[in-house]
Image (cartoon, rainbow, N blue to C red; front, side):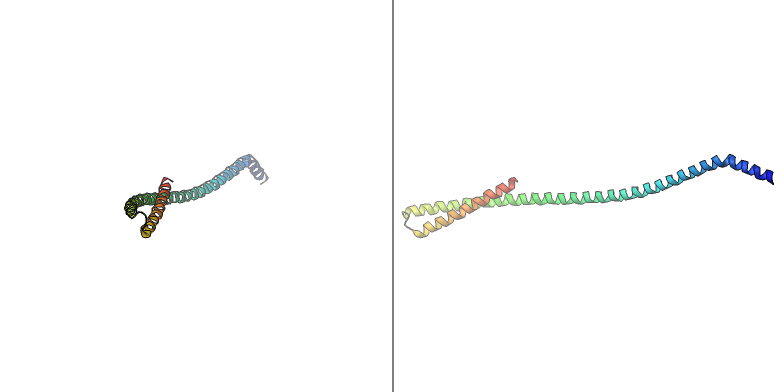
Length: 140
């Protein structure tokens, strides 16, 4: 029995470094498994973040596109307004010319014509200022 125990003790002593290496390898394997699990979790989280960023970019692109369309529509509306205002200015200038001729014919004695001329001139000035502001807005 003593001899058997001595042999077991000797075998244990001989295999002790091997058992230590096995324990170290098992610890490294456990660390690797833990690292792999953490890596997979982080990768999954990053993929979800990437998807959210992609959606955010797509939403912003859609918003940008619709804003650009609105600007284009606004610019075309502004162009139409400029055109109509220019026509109205020409119309008022023609009326002013007619009223000025009538005023000259009456030698400036008709108070109604003078008031009408004054009103049309103010109206014309307002339209010209509005047109200038609108043109300035279109440039920005």
